[in-house]
Length: 379
Image (cartoon, rainbow, N blue to C red; front, side, top):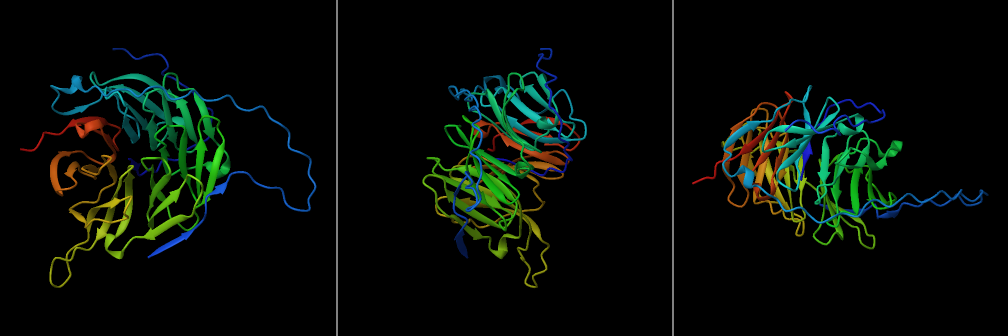
């Protein structure tokens, strides 16, 4: 579950892999799910469309990798990885094996990291590798990433398998994969699409005009329902058999929602300018806050008051562990108990990610640093 604030200017161009060589060691309902096919206008004669050859099928997902964090047993504290991204980090995510990570920078270079040594294993260069959002498949072989274009590509060599490049598919704000990793949900300005990765076809389009900027997407446990969170509301969509997009606006007490992370069970919302008004005269300064939203029941938790504004966020599937970054630090929270577990200084945090088991935190910063943090367990 990820969200990063991205301000880079992207330029369309042909992408190129530089690092294929390895480096040294209340509610409403509307906008029903629509088929992607478009009918010809009535009364207008037209020639039958040319039959184009079907695209080759994408490789089927392989077996899921088993996380291996044995290498981190004796690791403590914070480690800065060996290279910086000039101009800043856009995103950083763990690979499912627990031993590697992938990051992208404003410089248009994605780096594959060996976390044990802190060294770069591969570099990929080009506009498509300048992405603020990325998901790695459970077999560790493919990446779904989105920046100016949305691409599904091979991690081994940077080769594109599928790409959404039409004008209506530019500048995605959130992505999600089904649990079988055969479909993806991608949110664009005013449009949500369900993308069949195996064939490259668009299975469905959902108009999203008026629903704000979507921060996070997540398929439910059976992939039959999609949860989304925007800056205006929380919505759910039945993706199996069609159905309406059902949305509920946020109560005024949540302030301004600025980021969100969604999993199969819960969504975590980060807000700014929440007025907790502890004083009798109501003069308490506005504060940042976190909220948990149960995807199944649509119940919103009371606010967790923060004394800073979060600008990067991640959480475990159940919301039991939450990590957020601010302009000065990264903080690990215990969700159910609403208490601070650990905190580390980090300037201008642009990206945070939790490892499997929430043992490690990957941190991207505005100065281009990628750092690995192992929080001390509380007593």
